[in-house]
Image (cartoon, rainbow, N blue to C red; front, side, top):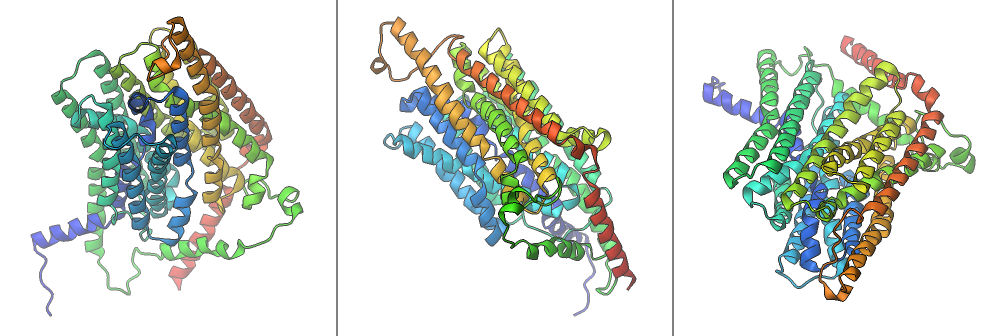
Length: 575
């Protein structure tokens, strides 16, 4: 057959196919999936509906909050599943879990089914929350593999979009359903699942091709994400002071979606450049121009270590003959090390107190007499500043580390101390203090996990990183259970019972146990602030232990590996 000349329509079709199958469109799909993977941060908005419709007391509601945190932080199953199945299957399983868990919660709240047992509601919310780990595994891990040289910036962006998820979905539900928190649960059920199903075949691992302006593209995306966060923050504050019509909510949601889709234009331009270069250089198969076998070399280098992992360690290897910090620890060596124990304590205190504050934010606003729309503003503010905390801990801590040798462990200490201030603002509230507390707690909460993941990778190496960072974040649901279910919930209920006693009522006299006044959360949040302060002290001990390590060149090993790979590639091309 003769070669058919390429017409304009044919070229457009080719370019469209090139974009859809490209790495950048896959990354755009990952942005959208991660922007829908933060439904757990909205618990403070719809928890009031669960409490009132099902007649729960605060202790029971906090138990639900614990199972939500448990599901959100136990990602081992999704990681194991990704080892033996393709990405599309991981995303579909996550979408199914998300829809099933939250849809059953919505069914229960609106009374479509008989009131379920508490253990069943705990299972529903744990199932729905656990689905975000499948989004993380499918979208984030695949994106990092597609852009291995920009993994730090990429993780910051993707986790940042997750941090904005609560504010984005709040705008969408106000536009679609109006001011109805029950319908928010329905939106959480179908929207993230629908996004995963739509892009289920788009997100996949691809051949790595280095591009000279890749870093610039990520900074464009960062700028767009910051503009989106600022817009959402302004709208949150305006909605507090101005009564919006439904049309106004539709308008703000449309602008938010337009900003969310704006990276697609950046990626479109990038793919256009790639497409043009490809057509200009379209080589015969034997041509080596401009295409060194980078992916092959990278794969070989990464797979060399996999054959050396099966090794039985003795007692001395685990406890006495440990590698230097920064070298590759085994799983047992890392988990049983003093550094990991200190990190676990700091995470237990920091994330445990932050999650407790997030889960109780709706009831905190109610106890202080704020209207429902204002309480939603608190949740949106927390979500937005959660984003800024993630960006800060990713981009800024990296810059400070490289330029000034500023240790990430010290950054963790400062973040925990900042969290103490936010918690005390709730314990001793004044006019407008909850707004400030939402910003501080959101920022510190967002900054902690990226810092934790980075510190684990720096101290214990990357060989077993996927297992170690999942183990590290297990302190988060444990802290949430003890501090939320066993401390904050009972103290709140005790204050609520005191209010009933003053009115001459008993617990059986009311369906919902509610406390109104500054005293409702005072004692609980004084305890939380003390725990966060203890976590900062623990982190400060780790600063002292790792001071010399961070004074050194922690990336030297990776630069040497890159130089060796580059030399190997050069010798391959010269043959």
